[in-house]
Length: 156
Image (cartoon, helix red, strand yellow):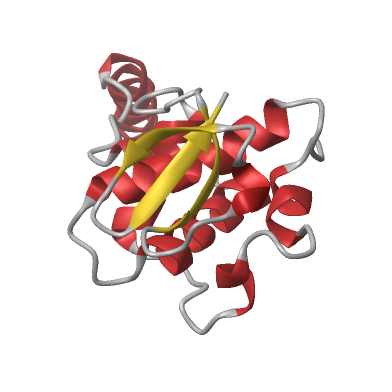
């Protein structure tokens, strides 16, 4: 009977050691999607949604999306605008897409927002944009930095 308990005790200890050994020898799980490696914040979610709303949900031109996201982040960093992405987007008369039915996140806009927040693809010279067919006299003190298929981007 003592041998039987000794074998059971030995097996329990061996299995416990094997689990601990396996736990420490197994490499940590690497995320397959780069977006999984950052914590989704309110700012990321709002930036993603405004990119989708302003660039258009079916756009294949990522240049617009990157530049629109850049304007939001550049304004948040600029002294003349609010310091928080949410306040920049909600500022009166600035981003009409905030109130549109296209104000939601997509996989592409999440990816672009994540890259922009990490510093990739950001154009630090743009502060304003408008549709390509509109001439804004208000923006005379800024120069056109870039033109895309559907927007003009202004900066300093």
